[in-house]
Every structure is written in C-alpha cells, then in structure tokens.
Image 1 (tube, rainbow, N blue to C red):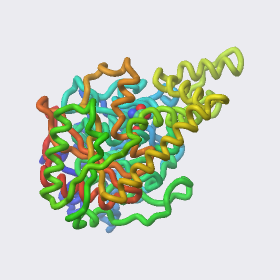
Image 2 (image 1 turned 180 degrees about the horizontal axis):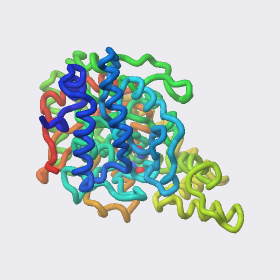
Image 3 (image 1 turned 180 degrees about the vertical axis):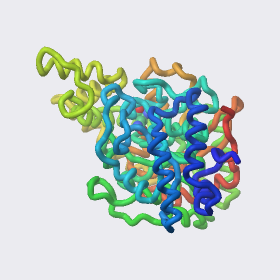
Image 4 (image 1 turned 90 degrees about the vertical axis):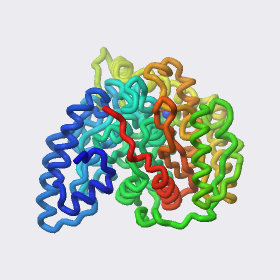
Length: 484
Ligand code: GLN
C-alpha cells in the first residue's frame, strides 16, 4: 500500500481501525524522507528517534482505550514554531543552535490530541521571503520540478506534503507564506483569521500580521487540523475568545445561492495567462455548483505591497532586536559590548533579514515615522475597509494566489522588488486579518500546479473550508502526485 498518497483523514481512519500502527506508518514515512528528501530538502531537522518513540507510545496507549482524535498521526512543523527539545532554527545562523525549552501552544494542543512530529521544515530566514531561497542553510526544491522553487516562506512544509513525506504540516503566514507555497506545490494552505490560532511559541516576524495555519493535501484535512490548533490561549493576548466549531461537519454546509465576488484588481496586468485561464475555469465550476459570481472592486489593492513592505519590516526590526548575543542565540565575541553586538548581528543575519531591519528601522525613526509607518497604517485601514464593503455584497472573494506558477531557482533572488511584487494577491488578506484559503485548481502546460484563493470575512473558516472542500471534490486534484 502506498500510504504516502493518503490524505491525513484517510491515514487517521487506518490508524483508528487498527489497520496500520502508528509505528509502521511513521517508520514508512521516515524511510521515504531518508530516501527522497535529499532531492527536495524539505526538512532542516528530522526527529526520527523522537517520532518513533512517540509512535510506539501512541500504539500502546491505543491498546489501553485511548481515543484521542489525532492519536499516532505524523505531521511536520515549520522551523519557526517551537517544539520542545528539537532545534528551532528559523533557517537562520542566529538560531542554528537554539533548542526551545517549551512547546508552542499549537504543538502542545496537537500533542494533547495525540499527534506526533517527524521534524522541522525549511523556510526563508525568519519567514522573510517567497521562495525558501533565503534559508541560511539550503534552498528547498519544488517536487513538481526540481529546478523550481517551492514558494515561501513555508516552502519546506508545502514541499514535504506535496512529496508525500507527511500528509499534514504547519506553516505561518504573514503576507502569504502558507498560501503561496501551497499554490506552487499543488497542495492546500489555510491562513486563518488573525487571532484564530495562538502564536505563542511562533518566532515573531510581524506581530500584527503573523498567523499559524495548516498545509495539507485536502481541504478536509485542513479543517481537521484547524479544529485542534484553534482557540483562545491565555499566553497569546491577541488570540480570540470565539468558540472553535467542528470544521469537519461544516464541510457539508449548503452554499447554493451564495455569492462570490471577483475583484477586478486581481485580474489586471502581470497575471499569467494560464493562471487566469484556470481561475476562469474554476469560476464556471462555482456557477455549476449553484453559486452566483459577480465582479467587485477592492480599490486600494495597488497600495497593498507598499504598505505591507513598510509595516512588516517595521515590526520585524523591533521583534528582531532581541537577537543581541546576550539573551540567547548566536554570540560572536568582540572587543567591547558594541563590537560584540555588531559582530553577532552581522554574522548571524542574512542579507534579506538585514534589508528588512534597515527598512523597518528607517520607517520608524523620528522624522520619518509619519511619512512611512503612519501612512502605511492608514492605507492598511483603507484596505480592510475595502473588504468590509465587499463582504456586504458577497459571501466570498475568489482570485489567484500568485501571479505565476512556481518560478526557477535563482530567477528572482537578486531582485527583491520583483520578489515583493509577486506577493500582491496574498498580502491584503493579512493586512485585513481575514481568512485566505489556497487550493489547487489545475496545472500549467508545463505541468506546474496552479492555486486558487478563496477569501472570507473574519471567522468565516467554516464557510470558506466548505466551499473549498465542495470544489476539491469535483476536480479531485489531490489524487495527483509528482514523480520523485
Ligand atoms: N513573502 C512575504 C515576505 O517576504 C510574506 C512572508 C510570510 O508570509 N512570512 O514578507
């Protein structure tokens, strides 16, 4: 049996029925990682011993009538989320040796639900990037075409799921880092509402934007994982008190007559023709499903990239001030304290992280604050209002995830502006704090996956997941696998 081809929910069913033990599923996946990951490089750390030990414990406790919902289910975790005792590097030299003494809340919750962890996946350093090429260690390759990037920053998690190293992983999304790699790798990625999932134990990048979410083979699987990671957490004051619904049973919601808005700003210049074509085909499917489709406007879209690339670096420059060689992380000795700071930060951070710290520090400095940070925050409000207005008329907004399918390794790393501009369709969702789901809607002529984005208002995860699930059951693209 090719277990790696099974979605998470199907793996769970086999485990629950006793048709496979967690030990055998886990060692099967670990073997696949050992054999195939050298070509993909999705993982920074594989925690094989811990995973096998946890799998054996899960099998034993199942025998003693333990019915925890994710018992024995193997997952992978982006390497900016703390798993106690395992390295959490953020793909940075700064944290190369860092082993957190605690679990992030999402990890604690998944452990309580019975899940086990195969390892930590690659990312752009501190989640800053769109290709995973900014990892200080190595780039990850796209399982559909190894000459191409898997997207980023959660490229390792998306590639791991696409390659069948695991059926589910966690990522983080500050400006598209769950959705864009999911789209490039032909898998599903959900950016939940800001506050839906606790960020305690997620290494902070831009705190007003960061959200943790699932990357999976199917929308149904994303609903399953969200159910167990969502909820209020005393340790994250920004987490929302809203009750956590049963996202799996919501998948059956009747959506006939619901309205989809198509923002005209998302179909302008710069959008690849093949991507445009596949999204249009998807719209026809939505109409056949009984939904109404109408054009809408999100007029401040053209300013989203500029606003994001001030707000995110500003917050990053503040968050990354803690890496000073004193508290934790890398320390490079110098002749005095200032020299030690300089050496530590010069050697510890890569080029993109330094660029963000400089932009952010500048944007926040006296005399420039009003012109940059304050202005960007005002634009952010306008972008959020665009969505509020639109959602008075429609239930969902649908568009592309990225302007093109996966690009070639090396093609954009030397042109940061070009890289930033390709985040145009994902960034507004973070600025507004709403829900964004990326799911496959087809392949390009070259055989590269193309993603579709479904956006919904705050806390509309049930409806967004339901629409995504009902759509995926028509095309069943999750049955397709890359040859590796
Ligand atoms: N590509 C965007 C950036 O570089 C988004 C990254 C993210 O969501 N973590 O900032």
